[in-house]
Image (cartoon, rainbow, N blue to C red):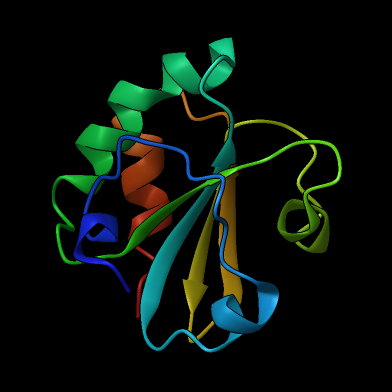
Length: 112
């Protein structure tokens, strides 16, 4: 995993990992699906950043989602942003459109 993906990652990447790469992750990680122009994604950014600030070693993978993007469809993402907590590549919990850092902290409290 790239070091730029540890802790809060400010940018959505169009070079999304494959489902096989996600399945192969070891330990906990956060997948965040969205797009830079999404108002909900922009509004959630401060809450996500603050919530993740206490988990600086947790990989935060921001995935540029949209029509034809297979990773988002594999995780059945319907709304942006969607944060998915993974453990060993398997979904543990998800949070859709967080409004405050406490919601993000509650999600991260489920880290193993």
